[in-house]
Amino acid sequence: MSVFATHYHTGFTLLVLLCSLATVVSRRLTSPSKPCCKKPVVGADDSNDSSTTVTEVDGKVTEAEAVEMLEDAEKGESAVAADEGVVGEKATKHQVIEFAMFKRNYLIVYSLVMMSDWLQGSYIYPLYKSYGYDLADIGVLFIVGFLSSAVFGTVVGSLADRIGRKLSTLIFCFAYTLSCLTKLSPDYNVLLLGRLLGGISTSLLFSVFEAWMVSEHLRRNWKREWMSDTFAWAVFVNGLVAIGAGVLANFCAETWGYVSPFMVAIVFLAAAAALIHSTWVENYGNANVRGPPSFLSEVSKILNRCRLAIIEKASGTVSTVALMEAVNIIRNDAKVLATGAMQCCFESAMYTFVFLWSPVLEEAKAPDTPPLPYGVIFASFMVSIMLGSVIFKMLLSVGGWPVERIAVVAFGIGSASLLAPVVITVS
Image (cartoon, rainbow, N blue to C red; front, side, top):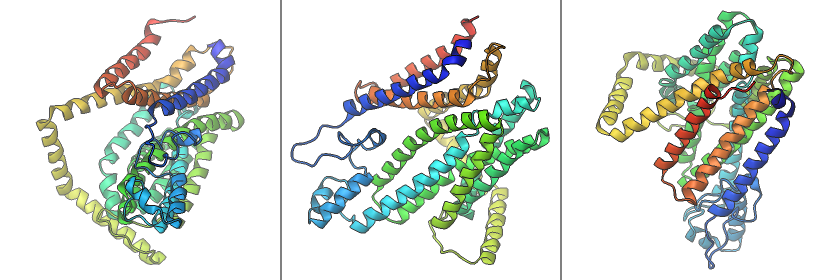
């Protein structure tokens, strides 16, 4: 561990370079061939690396492509773009511009909220340990967070459909801010409350933001292919944000202490809430969109919508029907059951790793070495995730591997990686 503590920056840099190289190679190998009679797809050979992982598939529109389509429209050549299936037959200059602005706004908000989430991932165990709690006490805190997310995750989706998805995103920002503030207190009950709020916030984070984006996209009657472009950019931006969050958290913890990454996360949450409040419109599960009412009427409607949603949930009619439909699907399709079982086992192993990687490295660290760079280690994990995505794409597109074979290899490598520290000891 002393060698790692001394040279972790070098290892992290090499990992980032390896991921970048793999991304470039993947782009070169998986780029579709260009027909001689059609215009080249922007991002195939002459775009920068930051966009190459999400602009290779025909039918997706990037900002560069939008500019090109506008130029073609001004020259009377928009029919060529329609024939290529990029913009679509009914796409107009206004729609292209509006979509580009919408996508940029959503990605900015998405990156802010994901940054606030990733900032908290690397130093939560060191913070709890610095308050004097042992591994068993910290384990209870983690379990409360996981259970909170699991329980409320089955409810927040339908609640957001009733009370409004924009409102739900603002509730996320408020609840996650409270969760971060609880980290200032060493009191165990306050920390438990923080984990409860964190679990609720996580459920909202991974449901209402995408639901809002999809609903707005469909309401504005944009091409469905454009939605896949937004999702692809969101995945790519999320990977970059996760890496940056680890490095930023490491800097904050070394400069101001273990609780500082959680305070910095509040800044990103506040920025996201301000953007959502000023630029987003409300939408609901029934696709109704309403204009901005007055403050008092908005408060009244919020309370009434929450009351109705809680009553509906308490009756259990909607949830029971949905649950029975899900059970019937699982019973009638063995593949669904097998996929769910594999996902359950993999997620269980992953969450076990999420809880144990910090204490395991802390125990293996030599006494005379400086504190572990948890943020940089966390960022290395994120780089590895991006590298795995690139390898998956190469195996699927270039190697012709079936998904089932890739899954077997991935599960095997993951099992060997988790088993290695048990059978291999390093003095």
